Figure 1 (cartoon, helix red, strand yellow):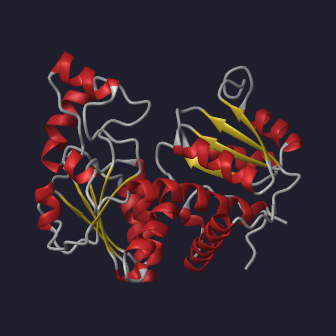
Figure 2 (tube, helix red, strand yellow):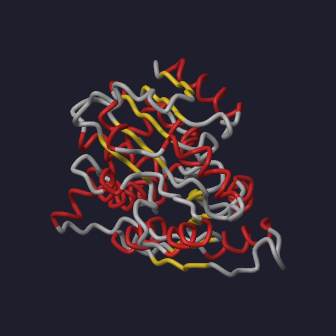
Length: 328
């Protein structure tokens, strides 16, 4: 199978076979890295990394993955794009200089315009409505830790029903046949279009896609997954409202037990507020009396938590995307 020259904007653009190919390639590249095998299929390639939002895992994953495979990167946080220069003009300039472009920022329309005008592969490192590279890492982690095929697994997302990672998980699950349930308060609403598209995709794969507002509706889960309650770029004023609505959906030891599965994994895209060792969590507690932790520290640090395996797998799966779409 060849994906050379393809863009990676959303998993909706890929078939189950193509996603399977990228997951298997990630496993192979991970094995080779552990064994010290060096092949450098991206040697001589130059990649632009555009970041309009802060990043730890995504930036490090793209940089290390690119360098492992022989490419050079330029990290951009303060370009003229969308300020003094249109996205179209910027894309055309980058397309003359770079072999591929990664974008992490706000609108999905921005990454789509980069695709439209650059003439080189474009990769989505996160937008307000999607995070496809995260889901590849999640699926790889699930396959490493659960003795089932993806289409036999039950994945439950608990939290904000308008979360971009949740949308990406919903798309990926629908395509790959995963039993996916999103559990969250009525105050947070899943985009009807996202749900409609996912349920249509699920008809082809046999997946089930459901929404629940009952925080105890987690029985039978193989994975409990959550995300922070206020995302990057959202107003601090949302904290009191979100904490009130989402506190009943905090991932607790009780919730993990309610799955009835003592091997149920806890997963999180990170960063996470699981204690008060961050300036934001401390400030919200001390200044506003808010507990913004979306997961108990006991769960985050438990044997069932695979969050750091998941974080490492961002690099291996991003490497697979890069090699598949740009490699020689």
